Length: 469
Ligand code: 5AD
Ligand code: SF4
Image (tube, rainbow, N blue to C red; front, side, top):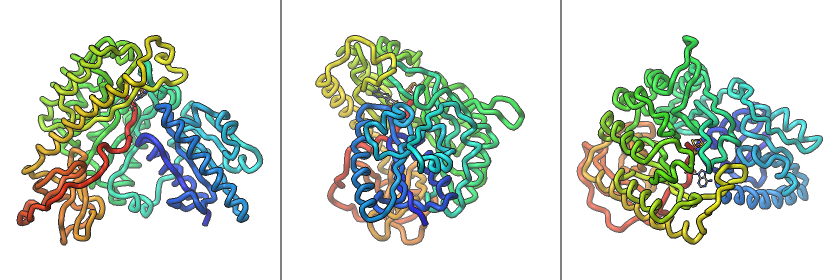
């Protein structure tokens, strides 16, 4: 069998797209391999959101060229594909900078991978056509065995692209205009996943709560209505959605948090900044107080909800006072976790032409201070779990024999000792201790454990699995 190595950078949609490409290539006789060495096809699924993400791609391509040359010397042909948002944005420029690349394919053309690969045998190929030519209608469904290997949590793209045009963001240019998949198509995919053991689905889209897909009744359905349908699928116990824009949190969606037990009490709702002046310059189309009031309404509907956000520091024109507004908002809301970034000027976006760019050293200071506050609230949230009993969905083997690891409703990693459970079980767990990145607990019916000593050593924040909105 031929081997393909797929490496995805950036957001969850790239993870999803990577799996879809694996499914397409699976039909062409490729099996996935975990390392680029030995692969016949190496596919980089790239991210264009910040400059650093783009630099990473070129560094990675340099390493892949070396592998390609080394394999060639051994008589093995290796082809390199660049997919994703850098492919879309840079197109043929990629092959100019790195001639070892055989094929450049944008996010809306990857359903054509087999024919593009065929063409690429004869000449280098670039396909970055943007309109979604019913890409989703052309994707093969994964086999049950493949779904099982991927685990009991799955992402499902329901919406792609964005019409919001925040002044800093490349997404409307790389992923194109908003597109929502029809309800029936989404439901068929989720039913298939549930049939192969998936219990936890995250509906994804760059602006997922703007979902407006065609329903089976020929009408336009919003995200709340879709989630009611998803909640009816036997076996689907947990539903999340990401990433959302505050302007699209409508009453039905807020009510779904109250009415659907399967909808997890955790919401990623990026605000980006706390200053009205900066929010206006960012073209976010809402004020900080409107965001505060929105959070108030969501908490009324679902009092135990936890929130997370994205923040950008150093947007052009951001003063010390503007930044203080962001800190104040963070302290008021008390986010359970958040991602924060230095502003990165992106070619082609309105903000890249704004004057008054903030010096990098100032951005560094602000980022440091912001992350300190975010971390403070994250730790407070995690420590507040100690003594509480929460349902954990067990997802994988734990760190040590006899341990299993799972996720809380709030996306926290939780480790428990158990001899009698297996992956896929939902267990009531008393949280006994909060480490810096995981919680530790015992099953609600088990004897308290002897308190372990010593803290765990692990990185401060999770990897950037973020999407825009
Ligand atoms: N610079 C810095 N951060 C950005 N993001 C999007 N574009 C930029 C940029 N140009 C952040 C936003 C978004 C997250 C996915 O990435 O916070 O919500
Ligand atoms: Fe759209 Fe989100 Fe980018 Fe704004 S930040 S343009 S809402 S994808």
